[in-house]
Amino acid sequence: MENVKQLNWGKYAELRPAQIEAIQQLASIAYIPWGALEWHSLHAPVGLDGIKACGLCEALAKETGGVILPPVYVGTDTIKPYKGFKHTIEHSSTTVATLCREYLCQLADEGFRVIVLVTGHYGEGHVEAIKTAVDQFSDENPDVGIWAFPDSEPLEGSFTADHAARGETSFQLLFQPEMVDLTTLPKRETTLDDDGVWGEDPRKASAEQGQQMLEIFLQNAVPRIIKLLEEYSA
Picture 1 (cartoon, rainbow, N blue to C red):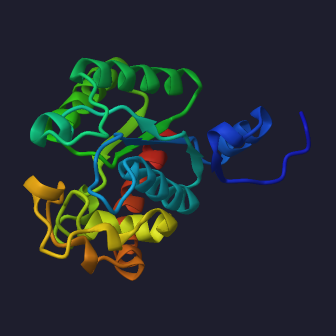
Picture 2 (picture 1 turned 180 degrees about the horizontal axis):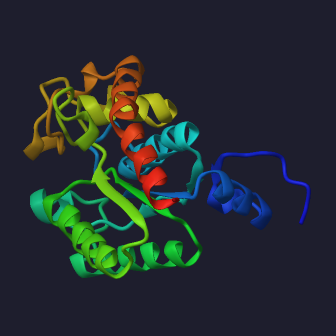
């Protein structure tokens, strides 16, 4: 085996086999950032959900160890059927559930003991499709620990979930600010029907608020993941 520099986390697609195996020895965790290609008003990229989820998974992996899969951009129950906004790719709930289960089964087959799926898109039907896949996988693989959740879950009580509004835009400004252009927004107050913004005006967003949200997210999520690793690595 090659001489491998000691790593405890990395991006799966960018790692060589020996590096993956070295990380697995230290922390056998696979992170799946999940998103949707979806209208996020005029000011933000259509891939915001996946960018956000990927940034959160990377922050988690730096704390716990593990590998991060490339973001999965396959979403259902998007804003297209709900409000008719284009620049959105809508998939069926069956597709989401099938793909999710296949990812989980393949990662278990690769020997990962803990799988953490963070979805940055949280339409009700989308979350339910993932839950269906996770429940089926868990019944068939009781020796693998799994936690699949919307990124808003560890923030409940501190920040309210939104769409293309203050919270999501703050995360985007934290992780990849060059993709945001707030000057493209109308001068009036933004709305869901007219702009596809659900929540507080995105012009109130900031990278500083994104950092504050990230710290709360990590504070609430990291202990649960470490507990899963301890339980399923024994």
